[in-house]
Image (cartoon, rainbow, N blue to C red):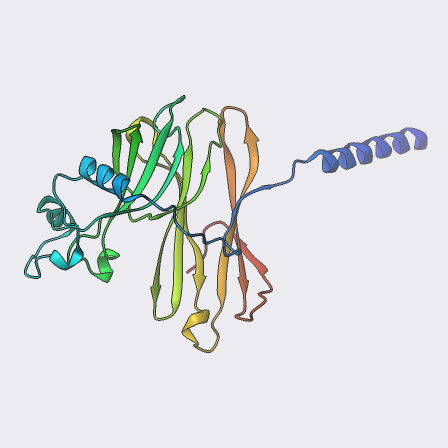
Length: 251
């Protein structure tokens, strides 16, 4: 009997150790603790003109030409041509369907008289097949491309995008994984706040918080499970990050 129990115990231990050894490690989708800011893609003037002419019926080439007496919301400004847009970033991929060679352009619309409450204007994504505009999508104020992915392996690329603002020395950044299949934006995962850094404010007790987004369970043909781990650090030059929570960052 003792011999049998010993064999069972050894077998259970072997299975446990084997499972630990074969458990796949988490793959980092993006680490917001790391300052990965890069210069946006330089968009040639001719490309700027081509893209903007396809996206907008009328627009201003200089924000100084805005009508100071214009009143209206962002949509009214766009309809009136009271905008001074510019293409601020781009990437290539297959975004609306499989097997495409497309370019996605991020446009800062810069509606005239847009306030801080309006995030100083909206942002759009224009997707082109060659010189043909195939999608013109409001980005819900997302303005920076962090990474291009195809997490479910369906041949259609997603974009991890962020938006951010500074208020009284506190930087707040939010992120979402977005799909543009069939020319419509779908939020695959909304991580909400991924960075909150008050170090530049100089206030006592200022801290930095940042998220790490990981792929924890990948299955062929399916969107994998994503995990958000949140860390905090003081404002020293060399930050010592400490894990604080999982899931959406607490405000």
